[in-house]
Picture 1 (cartoon, helix red, strand yellow):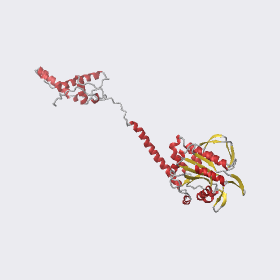
Picture 2 (picture 1 turned 30 degrees about the vertical axis):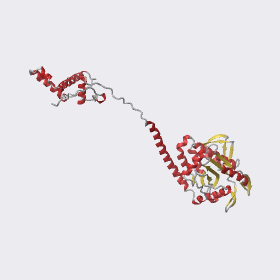
Picture 3 (picture 1 turned 60 degrees about the horizontal axis):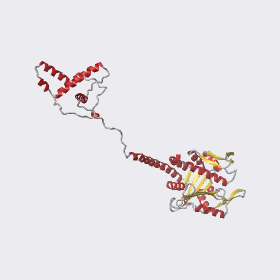
Picture 4 (picture 1 turned 90 degrees about the vertical axis):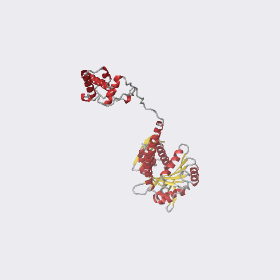
Length: 415
């Protein structure tokens, strides 16, 4: 017989007491040896002439076992009478808890408050998660855009790069002049630069100046004589166009960007179209023997419609055509700058670079975009090189007065 445990148990926590299992089977009689042993001891005691002192001298454990056996028998009889009573547990710890509960040694104590506490580092978790998400988005976006720029750099040859002038200071350290040529191919003929735009970015004053040159401007082309300025790209590509435009205006050109009009509609469609305010009703003939109509007022144009609007010129002149081109470009900039398109900028930029050839690197493009963003509002200057339309040798040309050209170029460089 094991040594009885006489240590008092006066207080227990409710959380440390195992609850009886409701799905446990009834305890068989063979698993209550203490009750059987007590019963046999009681029988032997009644047959023998035991005294009251012998009964009192029984170990305390036998007394507890007797009580447990009595509780088990009473629970069994009650279980047979009422099917809703809980069956007896087979765990020893549960039986001991029942014994202590009968003696009154067990006092239920409320468990600790398990409500979650607010920790100060919760305030840092959300900002840190946002920073990590922005970092991942920035890395993936930069990688996507950088791959598109790398492909566009291969479209500019070594001869065109040799015709450019190094600004010696970077786009964020010194004023930079960018030549934008919008080209279009007619059948199997070489492309012509239908749109000629000089852009000057000044990082010190945070200003951006734009000078549009009419495509029919009469100039001297080396080795070809006098002809329209857009024909320089036809005969010598971007290297000859850079040299002719730089000699005509007297402006050193630092970078070049060739934009293919065929990819222009896809770029506008990628941002959901642009809203252009048409100043007056416009009806004009367009390529393919078609006639197009544009009503006065704001209009939402898709890529194809916006391209037609920026190219038609048979109803007025080339100066009005350049004004429409600036309208479309300005509407596209406003649409891209919307908050809803901020997280789509890498994809939009990659889509734009598919139809672009440039010597600008990814960091240089981002630097020029930053200057343009700082120049929003009153620090953007747009001008057109004025001239007089004339018919020379059966062709339509725009003749620019040298004095007027000098004043216009001075304004372009002074802002």
